[in-house]
Length: 110
Length: 114
Image (cartoon, rainbow over all chains, first blue to last red):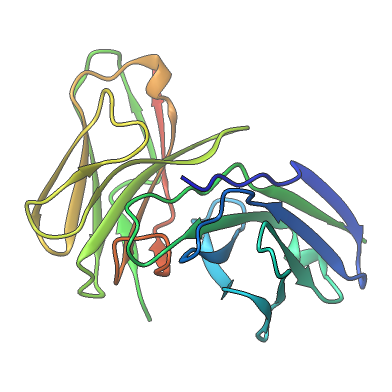
């Protein structure tokens, strides 16, 4: 089971780029890396997924180094509305187990 | 727009009561999940179901059971509620049973057992 480790919390000022790193040393060959965002009083929602190198969408970018033992979620120019908990999840299409982890609580400061 | 609904946002029950948490999805997903979320522990999987009447244990199934009689509905049952089951419970559904597939979450039920 590929467990993940993330910082418990981070603070950032509005307008800055925020990078949240997730460690997954036991990642398996077929595992993908997925990030979820959870606002207060809501369930998590999917934001981005990748296997290697870099993935970008309208919300975020995901950087995955060649060894895939870690990944970095990058949020460009954060605003107050990006204050949330961000979860890194590792899992594959065939495996039976996946692990959400404890998440990183991001607070954006005006 | 995809939707996962949970029967209650807040619930207060007494120790020893039997508690039912209901979850309904309208996306025709085969896979449904129940998690609990506690401060400092993140999301932990209790049970999941990959088809009607099928279920599998997650990481923390003790003290819980589930029921899936219809594709759209997945119920979490606390046979005899205890104070250590006070938590936020989140239901999710997905097109696939594994971590690779996007999961759609409901808003959660905050259960307090007194």
